[in-house]
Length: 474
Image (cartoon, rainbow, N blue to C red; front, side):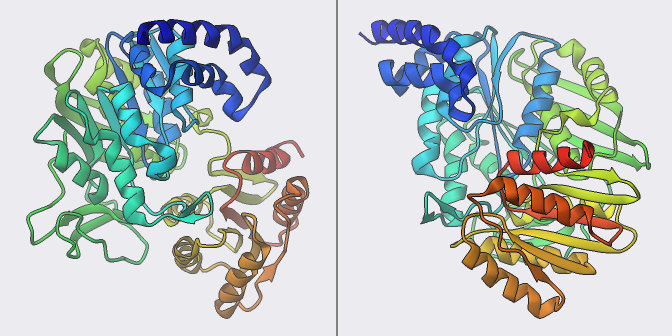
């Protein structure tokens, strides 16, 4: 009976598929929605079995889309793949199963909580051979109006790989949260860890206490690279694991960065160990993208069916990389006359730190911070944001609601004003997004400061991309 439902579901999904081009957002997943309605979510497991080499799912708080994009570029050189990115639903994965061809799947999957993210269900029906973790930090502290504690957010990420009985977990060793997920899976399947092995990279922000997920005590850091990522250990014995793929040298130039990456890891598709050593030249794309680069290369080397191509493909992709690989709406610095305007999403403290680090490459003079706030029940995010704002020590601060509540945004503004007494507040409505975009564009262009950073909460792509295009097209 299930095979009949699967066949009927696939047929109706393909018939309804052409209508997907008329939609955005969930419209792009229309075939998957039809299939799930007709055959049921559990029937997606029948679709997943059609991929000879299985599927890889990428998740994390930051870097998901960029890492997925890079991995698609790498694997597409060696095999035909089915893929989806910038979508956080099982229906997007089902749509790729139905509409695309290929032996291997590559799917981005963002998870904010267990109820809506259904990570254990996704793991069961997709049955991935790989789950890739970028980093885990505090993100949206409310989902559908309900407070979402960090421990529940972390558990949702954990569940995506917890039930795996085959394959590889690829995870960031420098992040104790993602490393702990790898630590828990080492007894079941292979785990490939990536991280940084360079002495002269160091975090410039104030250190925060990070809890050991194994015992609850505070971790001891020998070195910090970025926020909670670094070299750490705990009295219980938990520590940063040995690296399978690592950055061993970095030369940071104004126009390009030269990165040396070494790997010694297990490849699941070929069931063998592989080693590589590559030197790549990339744009000065921000320290966070070093981690995205390491994550994508580790996943690629873990699953490519053509292990003889590993070094040549990595060099070909990254030596010819341009900034178009950065997804729309993500943080970018635009030159407008003699002014540098950095703008993009910074929904959590970790993301805003990344944006601030990126901006510091340019901001050697006066700086204005245009901050778009979080919402009600997102005080934890605001506290993380405020630390970053203070660390940037801007000459002037402008506060604008980044989400729906103008009243809450004004509360955040009043806290900021205690440290920055010349700060200004603009109560722009979320419902009138066009006016908000126009005003934010105007504020940045009319700023009397040489450098402007505009970041915080807001529409994940549309708002930021529209503002950026306003700068580029003026």
